[in-house]
Length: 230
Image (cartoon, rainbow, N blue to C red):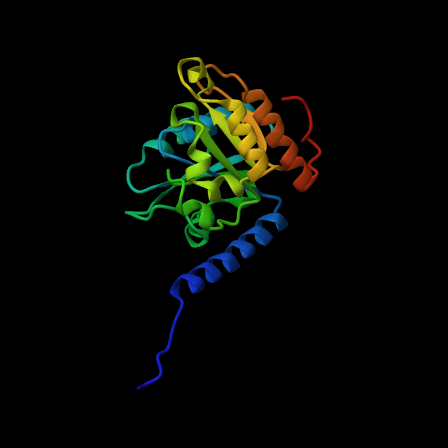
């Protein structure tokens, strides 16, 4: 019997992606550009949080946005309406963004004119958790209507983020979402992650979110403007 040759395609894909992600991080760090990967389920409020973040930080940082979607330009149009550069990545079926996709978007942007780039990943709690995009910071949004049990169903996503933003807190009184149980589960799974509660509709918690984000940018690049009250 002839020898069977095994090629682990998944391992090769992850290895190539990780190598490019590390290159992206090094390149952006050398240019003092901060990259954030924002992940969540569809409809949790990624675009709303991005727009509110732009409005609060635009006077402090030059901001760009990379929008990931299977189809449509609707989210990038909302971002462009805020007067910041936006690049739309239309994947045509892929359920996540990876380092090659983000790299392609970055190559079209004037990075010398930017301080901060937000990546809106495709709405999905599975695949985006497995692919490094080269971001300096990984943030996940969980909306109250989704329920506090998502951490049990998608532990990888919750375990690898630097911050969990709990959005749509204005729904809390009308749901059975248990914030304390969620905090206990996060403490067990990812004790170093920040948990920030917000309502993009009412504006609650957004100042805390932006101040925390500003502090992370400051810690990364020691910017002279960072750290001031927003």
